[in-house]
Length: 347
Image 1: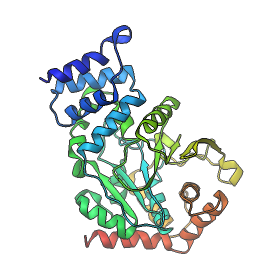
Image 2 (image 1 turned 180 degrees about the horizontal axis):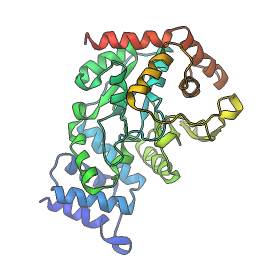
Image 3 (image 1 turned 180 degrees about the vertical axis):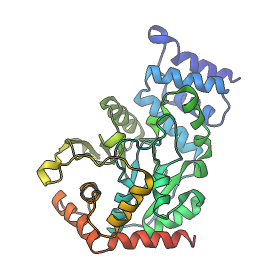
């Protein structure tokens, strides 16, 4: 048993009257001990439950991110026309609405905007469809790629996927605790704000509840992270909704701005596309990537157009929407998709 960890656990688990928040350095130390399994399983489970009940602070999340950075091998800077866009979505996937981040990444890459996504396999407690399964259904299986191979693909194709079990097994080692405690631990918030890339980037953080966004901002301020975007997306993802106004936060060196983006103003308002079996999603996705109009097309253009604008590949949102549509109809996106498939077979 780790006596040092026990003291940190006692600090956050003493209840509303005597409990205390951890400092940044204490949160980093606790996270390192959990990742390295220096804390016992009982201690790790107790910490996750206590921290969930208490709720993490921005300072604690900053320390947890410090530990992740210190114990992980990450993708190194590449040469590109634009900063890398890193999309952070819940690792436990989707269960109600159709996902678009994988397809959006291909559209952005067709415009020379590099994209990194990250995640693992099906994960408790939601057990929704993870990104890696969607990629595999398109003939792109990241699960067998080494980190060096992902680095090469990111440089040559402008797309990379950081697969947790392969590239950060220490973090993957904490996944079983999610099932055992039956609740999302604070690590599920961490995955919405951690980046597996160390170069110049725009970090996209999906969220559901407004307090989560406040945690992002507090932690990023402490860590000096300036370029990030928060999205109250579908099921906490980076996918913009179309049945309501999108609530978006834009942060840069000059400060934080709030954007309320109404799809109705641009002719994209519609009911959200429902989740479907992966096989059906894959067939629709392939048709969409080939430039055919499907039930996924408008949502893909809506998402891609926004991110093209956010990354500076389009002067304004209407231009971004038009560019996304053009890239699809002219076969540029399909070309990136097929190039990635071919490259995946040669790395």
